[in-house]
Image (cartoon, rainbow, N blue to C red; front, side):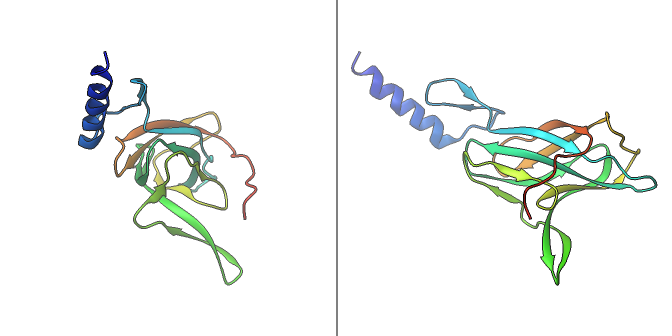
Length: 158
């Protein structure tokens, strides 16, 4: 029985060193763990005559990773943006290179902060609709989430 514990530890070490390429990770207890958990995904309704909107969500990764890009069938383009203050004006810019995610630390996309910008929205988005967002990461497999269309909660940032 004593020999089984070191053998199990070496097996887990070998699996960890080789990496895990499927959509889950095997935890130390042998259970599967989702590499990235997404909550509170919401996209604003499009304003009349506009083809642009923003989406917000919360992410937590089980390992250090990077959110590299976002895609959606609802719009021709989706990009990750940040909001900054420049000359007393709020400005939005694409985030180049993605958003770093530290294992276990929430990454929050909120109004006035980081957000997902949808450009050339195919059909107007109205409250009650849903939008599929496919998130692509440097390490974790792509993850498709369904965002509700509605007004996000007010941000405490900024």
